[in-house]
Length: 433
Image (cartoon, rainbow, N blue to C red; front, side, top):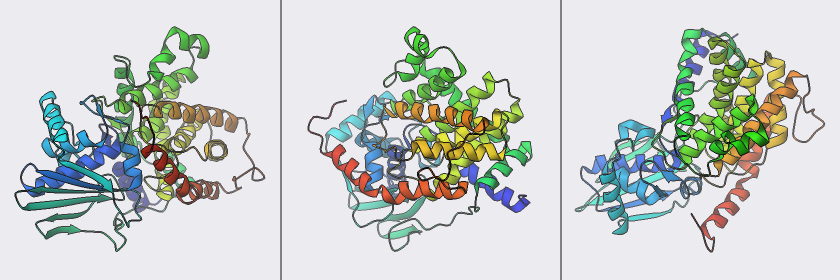
């Protein structure tokens, strides 16, 4: 059983990791650092120098910036300086207007922004913004998590220094030690009023999917699944609606729509992937609201647990983690218990391990549908008592060890893959929009 102190810690962890976000969180993280450095400077910067980890750069190159109709870091950086409000955290660009976008275009065109990789750091999530004006300068550094400031400095006056000697974020959070059993027990036994806040994820992400149908975002994958062509091939079923809802929300987000979503572990796409499949299944299956709450908590907390060992950013696509969470949630909604949930996790790891992250972009919707397709299949197999066994591939009899096998591959073994992906992305001969 989980004692009250552990319950308090887990609830705090979920509240920290499941938060609203507008736009892809990597460029938004950079905009947040710029906004805070600008506030420390006290005036609009004449020049901005940004130094980033490779994973931040990779995830910010090809994604739409909310409310701008533009793609990539320069406009996000400019708007961070011009209208960003650091207290809004992952909604830092919420106040963007057409006038601000035009100002931002001029700022970018004037060559005021310098972007480069940060050398000599181990941290995969690192964003350093140095703003300069009239002989003054201010610096803000985010590391480890998308909203965690680890260094603030203005004209040599250090306001905050929470870094280690490697430049990584010092771990000061009160994080509980999780296992899948503990995740399951918390989601299924915690007092309902303690965990019902997770319904905010349903509200935001369901609305994002609905609003996506009002326009043509990204590759329109979600919309295609609702059209006669999509329904003619895929049918009008719980399965097709799960895919459509998930893809719709991702289409809008990756295209830069000014539509907030509830994120998970610093990623809006992970939040969508952990939420929408569970919500659609619960609604179509006529589960009670309590069942939906507990399934959503199981889904989100499973994703958080896996990310604790994988890291906020890695070479492994986040949909692998988040769709594993949604498979657990769907299994619970189907009437499964802990054994079936462990089966679902093992089935997921046996299938999706190794899917690369090649940056945030409109085609992420394709990856999310691959993840949630597998989530449904894995849950169905689990409910029939079918599970990938320990004689197969990287699966272990112990489900937590299976999770460690997944995260070891994603966090360590795929580092060279990460470098290769970034090299390909930054040396394409004819990149197109």
